Length: 261
Image (cartoon, rainbow, N blue to C red; front, side, top):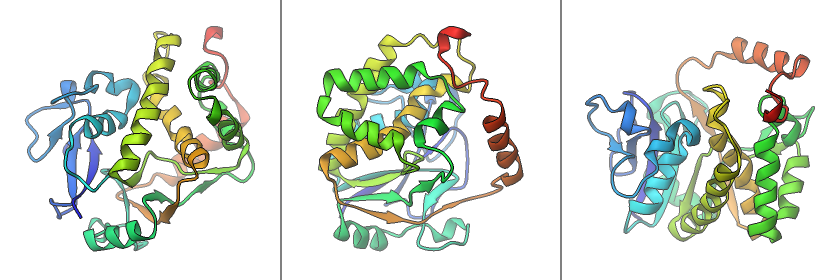
C-alpha cells in the first residue's frame, strides 16, 4: 500500500526514519519556514497555510486533502505524539508500514485510544477551557448544513470520552469524505464567529473544535475503526498539566460566551 502519514511540526524536530511512510510537514510555513530541510511545506499548492494560527495542524490535513495524490491511505500525527504498538516513548517505536497495513486490514480508519474524562462530559471539559460561542455556532452550522449529524453531535458532547488530538490514519476514500465534511463546517463557523479579541491560545479555536468532530463523523456514518496506542516523545510536563487542569475546574474564566469579554 502507498501510505503517507504526515508528521505536523512548526519547527525542526526529530522525525521517524522511514521517509517512505512518514512525511514531515511544516505547518504555518508562511511564517515558520526558516530554511528547514526535509519538510513538505503546507503553503504549497492549494492550501490554507495562512490560517494556521487558527487551524493548527488542520492546515496539514487540508494540504494533504488537496495535494496528495495516488495514495491508498493518509494519516496525521504530531512531531511529539505518534502512533506506536509499544508503550516506550521512543521515536524508534513508531508504527511501521507493515503494522499500519495490518491495522488497516482490520478497519479502514485507525484512531488513538479514546481519552476518558470520567468526572465531566466532553462539552463541560471544552467549556472549562474555551469560549462557548464557537461551540454553539458549530452545532448551528451542523444543524443547517448536515442535520443528520446533530444527534451524534449531542451524544458526543454528552459523553465522557472521545478520540482526541486530530490523529488518525484513513484509507483515502474515507479521508476525502471526512475532509469534505469537516472543512465545510469549520470554514462556515469561521465566517460567523468574530475571534479578533481572542488571545493567541484561544485563537486556535478551529483546531480545538475539530477534535470534537471526529467522533461525530465516525458515529453518524457508522465507520469501522481500530484503536492504536500512542506515545508522546519528550517531557510530558505532567505536573504543570495537572495544575492547569485543577485551575480550570476551580476557576472557569474562559469558557463563557466571547461577547462577554
